[in-house]
Image (cartoon, rainbow, N blue to C red):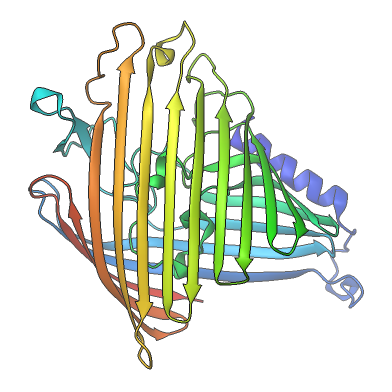
Length: 378
């Protein structure tokens, strides 16, 4: 189902499940109001990089516009649009001498282009060429069950399920892109107990961070997540699994994710581990490879008491090893690993504005960068 047909379906279902409103404003009464909330985030970025071929940049990093509202007491709609540049520097990777996949080469025609919104090191995100980030409906007819239909973030990733103005680093981790894509489908969210949430997702897309218009065709893929919250608002654990069936364009893949969050007063700790195993069938160009993708990170931040200053640090590891199915040889340009250490500060002028400075120490020579970002939300 392409993007246009999908959005038409959303509009049709909204009309079928909502009260009928007159075009005359005086018909919108207290008994059946139509209420929309508009918000947004604007981020302006200055980048200084050690990479020789990468120009230093001053630009609008992101400009997100969110429009949400209730169509009736049990049906709400959420949309998010990207109005800014939504780009990040192109990077290309290939195996170094001796088969050591560490070499990094900048190339405008790179086949591992990262065009994720703010995801300089987020890796290729499967054609995120649309300005539509999210567009989904949520049905809450049942007390402990919510159903979401549309384009939304997979629940397995912390960062893509966090609003922009709540992210503590300027760039996403490497997990976003390979593991944290936006997707189109249906999500069931069950809350059987106060300390437990269960999510089941079914989708037919491999769209990127801001959606996509030209993704490979795919069968329905499925995923499940369980979240345990032993200490309300302070401590939670998650475990996710995902299966992507084989198609003519894409190999079969199975992955799992585990993570934890701890937040107490000014301290915030986050950890996520991702693993994806690709096990192809016997035909098709894309099915001639097999391999594993592994990534994890540890994130820590602390708000200094009685100040507006927040200290942030993160260690991120990414390892991708793809082999030819028949020869078992490593595939050129498809294998690399990377380690990134991020350190920085956030200064919160107000609840709606802040200044961020981050330094990224990237594996390999002369790959480091420093970013300074001003953010305003409304």
